[in-house]
Image (cartoon, rainbow, N blue to C red; front, side):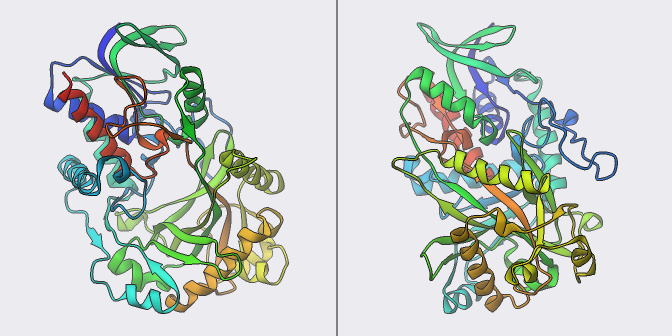
Length: 456
């Protein structure tokens, strides 16, 4: 079958590319190929009772399918250039922010109305953080919640399904250059298009590497973020989360001058498992619906590591640490902060006696046997620093789940149109290594769609 545009990946970048293309040029013949399931078929079998751990589904419903890995996230759209990617380096700061606001408007139109837009502008906490050598990054944050985020995606799909041809459970094997454009090869079918948008997300990182190698598209190594997810009583961070919801705080350690940052804060949320290429790591969710909220807040503490020579495989490094955690704990390990400081492993008895109830069933253990000392020292320093602005963070019963790893695709060489060396072949979203968030990935999709339309 021949199409005007083929989009590979139905995550945020792919969805918003398709949305903008058919909105502005409804006569275009657009197809979206997605390795995962349709939204209504995305169900993880882990129920905590009959199925307690990952069973290695052929297609992970948490990480792939319509909506991408963000479908069951806590639905935070950060409108900022300070974090979430480097899209602004390619299209300009104003354009990047304008596109993120445009995406926010669309989300409001498709079910997000009534959700709150938080902002760090003018907050008193910025000064308080600086006084303790912590740095609060600027951002406006739209929190949809996992429940409302699903509704927005559902409404977007219902609007697009009659205008765009979707192929679910259809992984693309190869992309080839042809005289008329591009050929997209799947297991049992081949399709062609004039222009192709690749938006495969983090789950497609290894596939993306293969495509770039086969087509000789230049790339460069990206970073990997490694750390733990912290869970504590919601009251500890309530003064911050009530006003800001998401507080991105960065700290430079005294010992090694590494940067440690908070990431993905979930007030009254739950800690969850995440499966990336068969490796079980940890993440967090939160909900707008009060009935689904918990008494705990969770967030990640991550240390960024870059590699150059002679070792360049940042993701491989992160994977090896995560696999060690899986080997020792059979999945995610949980440890009380007090036990970590005392140099002893947590036991189920110590977890049960804590003044906090874990929201994830994890294996009690010793994270110091998993994380390298340099990373662990930085995380411990950060916890004590946060304790100064949020007293109670460094309590003995604060829970640390590990490991949390944020894998980033290698950065693909593209121009200001997010087009690689081949005209009409666009690499966007987290699969490009340029965006690392829902808002940036979505914005990149709109940007590419507008460039495609301009070239028609």
